[in-house]
Image (tube, one colour):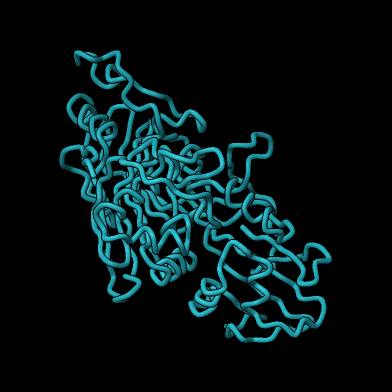
Length: 394
């Protein structure tokens, strides 16, 4: 998403960093920047950028200019942003001391703005890895990632605040001071489970965020879909954009509002009436997996926004004693693997998160009652066996 504003305050400027029109063009007012972050979907990995067209000679340092226009970041943070090459002036990497002149074009990729003070809450977490720079968690379904105006508590960040306060030697106070939404580099939708990375330092934050921005991360998902998917592997290359009439939905769009989107899928197991599919994301658009799979006729189980259906235990195995109990009341989508370069060592790392109990049980029941075949899909890498997980008390 992109926000535009003029350096002299004379109104919005046209264009975006790519020179293409953007559907989120607004003036670069601080309050509107907050609003833009709040309404951005959790699984939209498109970075938020601010674009400023300088319409008069300011004779002002770049860091001081940004401090005026992005007041929710400190000058120290903005200098770090510039140092990590998240700011350009006329498409070139500047210094914090670069003086801005008439005609300059400043583009800044911004971290999320601060919310109110974050309360530490004792919420169970499954931590996959932690060091001095980052923490990797297996996010449970139905957990919102960070506080917002409508959700001040009960989020992953509230849980991490507790973890840092009680288990990590006061990391939260430092991170909370600098970022206020500690370490939020990327997000998963409330109902999507799986592996997430959160940064524990500014340097780690900027460097991991940059990898998401330039698509250097590796993202693999597992999803359970309605139907026996054919062909068994393919690339879905269809542009996505906002649904023309339904506010909360997205759709395949072949007009100027459609953004290039690529999803690689590989079927791992086929059951009677269902398939377990491994997804490799080449882009990270809002609702990308859900829209693409539904569009080709195989909606995610539990995803009633995109033609999927909620299921009970009995839908998969009527002989179970709890056959009437709900089984999947959320989209059957799990972020199973995330790979990236460690922000400090530069070493390539990858983390896999086991399926949560609801999805794991659904797969177990289908394997027992409806399994037709297991496929050795070329290019598939996920380990999909093993017992379901539950969050550990922190």
